Length: 380
Ligand SMILES: *Cc1c(COP(=O)(O)O)cnc(C)c1O
Image 1 (cartoon, rainbow, N blue to C red):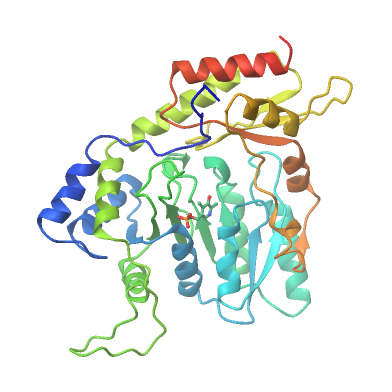
Image 2: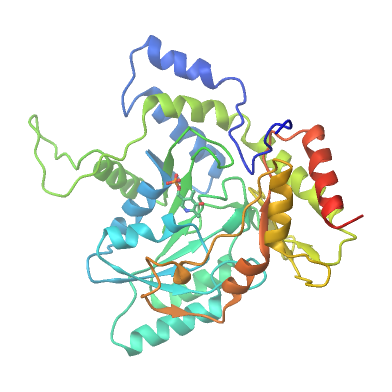
């Protein structure tokens, strides 16, 4: 293959990352704590606003695990979870010995459907068990229906774990994603909008909750000169080296959000005359999406030989990576035995959807290749 690979979403360094990493070496802070960790937490708190308290962790998955613990989830509990998401939203429910209860998406934001959510809660209550928490996700950086979900959370007094792993830089009515839940979660994995190579964070509404998360993340060490433990601990703190990368990335976050949004605009323009394709976008101006990944849906047409999978294969032949949407959790072998409430909206989206290259580091030459491959596939 002569053409270099165009990735769906790859790391994009801003320039100052190595300076912070070098500082960590120069001062010998090569440890899962240090000035970069504190600095990154402060940068994130300033960025998110809303009096958020941020604890930097080793991954977004670790943040979800600790978030569920902080919300009181224990073995035998039930936790409601958006079905259409990455498995990391749901796996920590099983780590805790709790049972996931999956809920379908609505069509506007592709996130947890308020109607199905309330149905699920009413039915679980009728079966004698009150769900302990709701895991809601801002898929592809598009905020979920924040007010409707909050209203249900308040009505039934069930806290929300806000999985904002894909939505750093997104906002709803001017408030940043990550700050809506009873706890919020961010990810800095290699493919996310900014990266620390691997990492994540918990966003808490109070300093006590953040401190508790950091306590759990550092082996739950009691205040004593020796190693003393009264609670189960985890080794989930972020390394000071990784946090150095994160500090450099924070300086370019807004620029990268703009570049991802430009990629989304590019696809809106590219597909505007192709009737079979709809580019996924926010329902109205209350929603601001970072468009971490641009997603499209394709109306299959057998006579013309088009569907999402055929487009994926055609792009792949040109060394252009694209990927089906997240396969809903209730359809996954590991999760299919758990309860599900829905109308197959997520299932239908999974069948006809595709994520297209969305990185902030894609250039004109990449866009031209994508354009050519798409136009060739649709025979234009
Ligand atoms: C990436 C992601 C996570 C997990 O984050 P990691 O840092 O990779 O552990 C969780 N939820 C969603 C929706 C994600 O996309």
